[in-house]
Structure formats: structure tokens, C-alpha cells
Length: 305
Image (cartoon, rainbow, N blue to C red; front, side):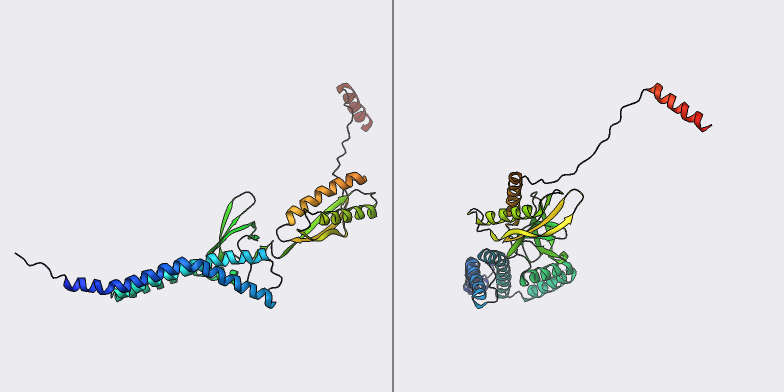
């Protein structure tokens, strides 16, 4: 009978590797478990220190929270990927699989060379975050698409527009980004009145509505500067346009503008101020009988001869 294989050296090698393997796995699990709360605490301290030291005094608490949420998800993802990759390399080293490690390095280098667009996406994503261009929760316009940033990763930005549609944009394609919710926003309204309106009375009414809106407890915390008349902006075909501007908290410009328009309608109705609308004049002539038309044509022809 053939003798049984000697498994002693193999078992001894596995036994020697159990402790290092356990240490690597436990350390990796602990890092993955505590990465998110640790990153969140560090980010809060960094941003709060920037506020107290004066470098970012204009940042409000909601702005800080948006930055923390965005950076937290990205940093935690990078940490998790790094921990898993390092643990895999350590396990391969424990099993003395050096050639496999070298082969993986070549594969990674080949992917990096072939995926230059992906590398560009990651680089631009890092710059977007580093330069504070926008964060998760901001309302931005990218390449003509406006929406709320639902996800900001190193490779892509995910927007959801007002219709609920989701737009995914590679960060490498972002050439211009317009942030509509950075620190503060403006109410920018053109109010039209009819020609012949007492302009002083119309302007006084507009300014009064703006002050009342800012003093309303339901809107006072949203309005930073009451909407007020800036100038007579345009002499249009159907009316005179008055430019009205004000300052509100970031993200509140749409709600405040809608409420301001609603109150302007009520105030103008109470003051008897007319808001113009396009008019169309239709001239109707009575239809002539066919015999009369024929007689007129014959008379015209006779006069020509």
C-alpha cells in the first residue's frame, strides 16, 4: 500500500500563519467598523476650527453639515477600499505569494493606463471637493442640467431635477458648475405695472410688501434683506417693469419669491394698481352679399377701361 502523504509541514505552516491572519483580519474589521464615526468627528473639528479662526466665518451650520456629509462618504469609501486592499496584500504576503503580488501590480498599472478617462474623473472629483465647488444637498447647474446633488463621489456627480429625473455626470466632464445654494441667495423679480400707473404709489406698495414679508414670523428666519425696489427696469410693450431684489438664506429663494409674488397680487388688487397683460384688437367687418361683391368688381373694371 502506498504510504499516506506527510501533512506535518503543511499543517505546521498553516498553524504558524493563523496568528498573523487573525491579526490582519481583526485589524481590518476594527478599521472598517470605526472609520465612519472617526472621520465624522475629525471633519467636524476641522470645519469648526476654520470658522473660529476666521478662514471660513461665513459658513453657516447647514453648510458645514453638507460638507461633512459629502466628505464623510468619500473619505470612508477611500478608507474602506484601502483597508481591504492592504489586508489582501498582507494575506498574500503571509502565504508567500510574491509572484501573485507582482502580477497584481502589473494588472493595476495596465488598468490605470487604459482607463485615463476614469483617472481624470477621479482627479476632477478630488478638485471639486478641495475647491468647495458644491456638496451633497446643493442645488447646482451642470452643463445646462439643474438639480439637487444627491451624491458626490470622486468619479461622478448625481443630480435629481425638479421632475424627479436622475442625471449622472462624470466629474471629468464638468466644465462649469453653477451653485445656487452657496451661503445666501437673492430674490430677483420683475414686477410689471400698466402705463398710467402712479409709479411712486406702486414702488411704495412693493416696498411695503417686502417689509411685511420680512417681518412675518413664518418667513423672518428665511429673509436676510427685505425685497425692495432697485430701479424702473424696462419700458415694455404692455407695461413698465420694476426690478425688485432682496437677500434670503441659501435654498429659500424659490419659496420666498413665490410668497412675495402672491402678496404683490393681493396688495395691487387692494390699491387698484393694474398688472398689464397682452391685448389683442380684432376688427370685424360685416360680410358683403355675393351680388354686391360682383357689382363692385364690374364697376371697378369699367372704370379702369
